[in-house]
Amino acid sequence: MPFREINSKMVEATLAPGQKLFSQRGAMLAYRGEVSFTPNIQGGQGGFASMIGRRVAGEATPLMTVEGSGTVMFGHGGHHIQVINLSGDTLYVEADRLLAFDGTLQQGTMFMGSQGGVIGMVRGQVTGQGLFTTTLKGHGAVAVMAHGGVIELPITPGRDVHVDPQAYVAHHGDVRNKLSTAVGWRDMVGRGSGEAFQLELSGSGAVYVQASEEKL
Image 1 (cartoon, rainbow, N blue to C red):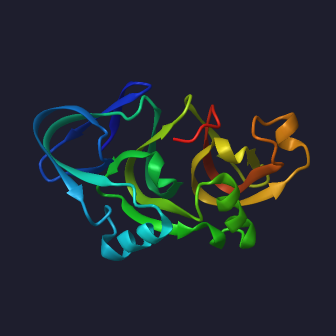
Image 2: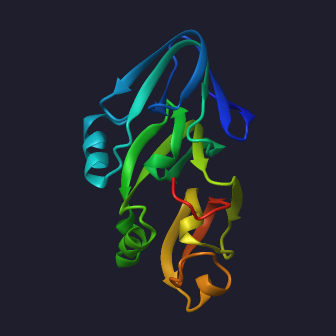
Image 3: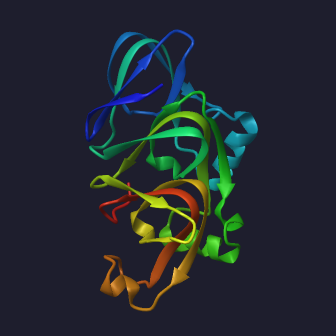
């Protein structure tokens, strides 16, 4: 189901009987109609094995299942919200950035070390985002949170995108990422704490970048 943006920090979803969505617990601001909210012990679409994978990965952000008939408004912590529509592809996003998403999407966990070997593992340690990331795959909408708003940057073959790791929010498409070093890069053109790292994304897809280096 699509999310309607009320403003930069609130979205609204319309539920019909037989539909459901998952949201971060505590993200519901208001609702109309006959809507139920149930703590989700299975961690969303993907079942028990997926839940165990996320708990091992530290990706166990509490979710609730939202069902019924009506409209529900979501927001959390005054964070900016970006709605991402998926058309059969996979979104890679940190679990704590998920505000709400379609119940039709298949949720899983990916070990970041599989994208770039040791470099992928180093990325998790340096950025503090963890070695694992949440994946959402299928057709549907996802509402993610960020500081200061989000910009979508296309990634095309031969035109890699370099991102400050602390500003990275999510990406989708057939994209590979690796952490590379560039002496003086963060000191001169980034706004980080001095580490000379940049996240290099290549392939075909898009990356979402927030206008801040603050963590949620």
